[in-house]
Amino acid sequence: MRSELKLMADEDLARQSQAGSLEAFEELVSRYEHRLYAFAMQWRHNPSEAREVTQDAFVRAFQALAQFDARRAFAPWLLAILRRKCVDYYRRGQPAAEAIAPETPDFDDPAELLSRREEGEEVWRLARQHLSMDQYQAIWLRYAEDLDIGQIATVLGKSQTHVKVLLFRARRKLAPSLGRARTETPPLMAAAEGGNS
Amino acid sequence: MKILTKFRISNAIDSRRPWSESIKMAVATSPELRAFAERSEALDKVLRHPPYPPADASLHRSIMNAVRAQAEAPWPKKAHVGLWLAPAAALLVLAAMGWWLAGTRAPQPVSQMAFVASSSPLETVSAAIEMGGQMSRRMPTAMIAPLSNEWAQVDSDLRGATKIIVDSMP
Image (cartoon, rainbow over all chains, first blue to last red; front, top):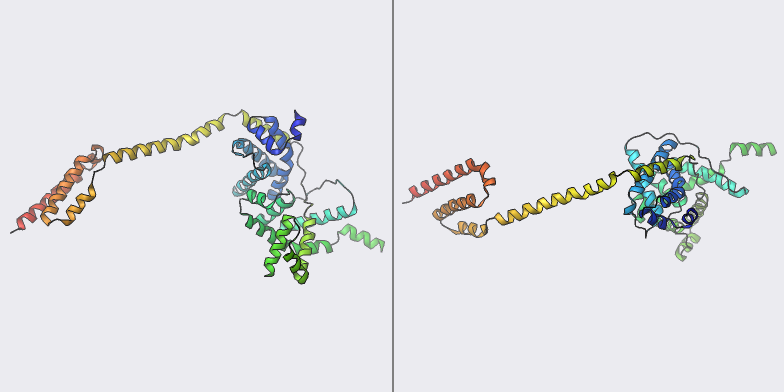
């Protein structure tokens, strides 16, 4: 049964969950818990709060399963619930903790991929510093969640044109940062280069 | 106009489809647009490696515990019933009030007012007194009872006014 669930599409699992299958919903939790946690961390920067928001979002999704239209994609619906939860937490005025340097798992080790990943971390760090919350979330949903414009609009509760403008402005702000990230050599690498010369 | 072309370049990157001929042409002829396009494409590649924060291994267990507790709790169904029951009851009461008011309204107040406006002063006064009497008879007792003193006052004022007009007539 478990292996069958693993092969099913999200929307089919949601349909089974609507029919009362807790196992199907658990499979959805397994698929999305890390993605939701990552998105919540971008908003709150605090592991315990991100964990709480993620849990609340899944409970809310479970309560609201009857409202989900299984003809539509499941991910934007779930992420929209999470975003609303994040907004609720934000409005309650709980102070977010300072940003924590994220760890990234290594799946591959080619030099180019590694350097791109380092550069990516730097650009994402700059994005968190310089972009507005809406711009940052649009960029995150575009690249981390690989959502298209329409799905991002659903999650953020904005029009597609607004999302396009958010992504455009984010790119304009980040483009100079990319140049900086490329020219700034990490201290360890600089030391190694200095030692070699 | 370059800002619009930059916007179109940004959209083209998001759509992940081949660029249109007009964008290619604009990029080829403008160094500024070419620089923007190159940086945007480089940014697109770099951003595909977002930093995923590692989640606690116990996250799954705590989520499912909360979901199971929710599944066993009966309150959402009760709340769901309460959600539609209250507005439905309010609508029913409003509809009943509307039906009752429609049944007890004066039949043709407009024509009476037209008669009052087009008549002589004496006829006007007598028509007003007649209307007041009709209203007090037609309106339900529950509505009139709290205003009985006021109605009596209005009635005596009208009668006084009638007497003055009749006395002043030659």
